[in-house]
Image (tube, rainbow, N blue to C red):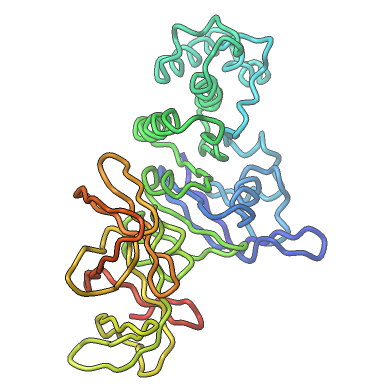
Length: 355
């Protein structure tokens, strides 16, 4: 296990810079998830950690060692890819032990390491099978087992669950998290799925356009997003955003005009009269009320445990999530109240959090 440090790392392809001076410090044994939309630079950053992409400038350290110019096999890391990359003509046992065989490790030690990893991953009954005889989840476990047997300082995962169906993704999320709790190996995990990030990470790093937007624990980022991008990206369904103008501040409350409706939000440091703002409220923090935001029901999505309702308000789309069951119909007019303690306010120009 080892600490991983990224210092002012940049990556350019010709004249185009795609990673813009990223700084990260990943503690020994920490599970860090890099999350963001497609093209944000998360996989490029991971590949630079792995040595599969050259660092244009800056430093990458694994433990005390600067590894910028080391090849992947010299960095003491193990990577699990989106594609399983298994040898189809080799058994599970041979696939898992192949890298150790290349290192000319003693056969008895290879067999022991493979057996130990297979037991951890529930693969012992499948060691004599070929990849074609395995399910998608079992193949992904083999790919993980191939990484485990190397006993690396750092695990790198590049969207390993993307090829699995929804139910299996949930199962594998749990298995990867349990694996980390058991091995306590420093882990960097890349995904575009913010639910994976929220449920798996010790620390989330939100990337956008080659920049780090925010770093923190899942609940810190969920409860106090630094800016409008993070607020809208983290959370499912995503946060509702209402553009408006501060109409006045008094008695600890700010009145915000949203179209021809006025909403009240806690007065935050940095709010000023006539300031353009965006009011954010998560779907689960909207409640049916006799007054509040007048909205029209457009679509009802029952999930069993919850009901997601998409509504229209002042030409903008709102989503509300109710634990209770309601008999909504498209076209119904309702009023939605916002929990003031759960309201987020962002500057209308910069998008940065206010207060």
